[in-house]
Image (cartoon, rainbow, N blue to C red; front, side, top):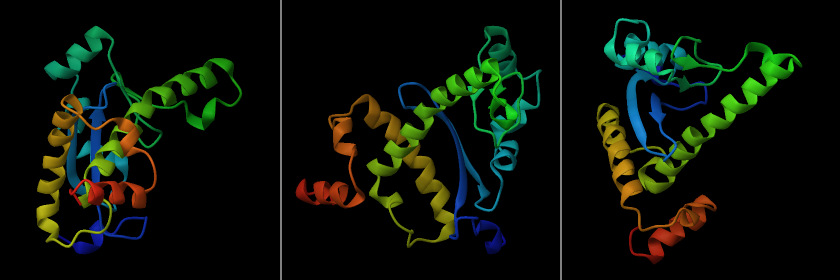
Length: 178
């Protein structure tokens, strides 16, 4: 492992986490194999799901194609039979392309919100970790299914997840959980 590979463009050490979620804000798949310096499309290509995307004979990919299903992704990824990305160049004023980009972006909002909920739910993601770097993927992998479990059994309304980091931390301290 070369530590410089994990130095992200944002100026800190990181892992490139790739994930897919549904409209209920639950994660269906995730991978955190790639170092933080990796481009998103490279991180996806190195994952098991990314390998399947390149194999139309894969049963799950064949099923997605047959059922007309796709995964929405941002412009960092490549377009394929099952990966829907934004129209390059923003549509350039073409009403059909602009309309596609609008609805495609709207579909991706669930992912951004789900990821935000995951980070807010687990205070461990609020600041840099003081743990061996090699243990971080395990912590990340555990957080995703736990997020899904709590989404299904959630007693904390989403409104409690809104607000500033300071307000959220104060809420946890007040409830004896922080």
